[in-house]
Length: 228
Image (cartoon, rainbow, N blue to C red):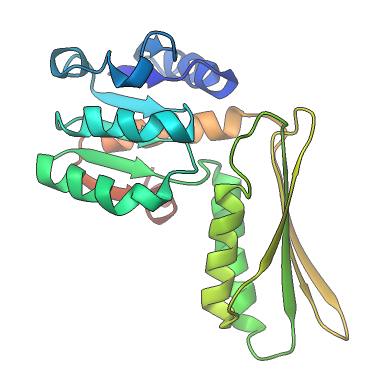
């Protein structure tokens, strides 16, 4: 399989390494080579089976518009663009493209989201208040993280709580720590996920690309990750 990787940051580089390990051909475009998505012409994109994007919230929407318009398959690891999700889903459907999105491609995070949903439902109406805290490296541009937002939305829906406060910290080279706390007058329940490296995100993205390569449509990673 031929994979085009957009973004040559730390995670993008690791995605390229893992794709090579799994026997795929890889081509990487950094921001200078793809300013305003100019490199993503239809003939160029047609040379790849899947495109994986780990760029920035500003760049990713232009990249999606260019690639999905050609009917390409895209795995989006970038967050901070979900206000455009409806538009991108519609574009993918109109063009017969494939779009995979997710706030976090770590399998461990997906399990945490499932546990959070069960916790919210089980504690519903029992007098618990929730808080979420997330810590990431200083270079992460969006805050709160997409994972924290997803975590909050899942618990809010399961527990019928209107809004959960999220605390964000940016420091050093922290890969990602997410903590969900449920507290009552009697006790406290805590779910924590801590990433030790970017490898979990990168492996999940490459596996998602392998899965998406034979499909069209729009998919949330959380809804399909158990199929890999």
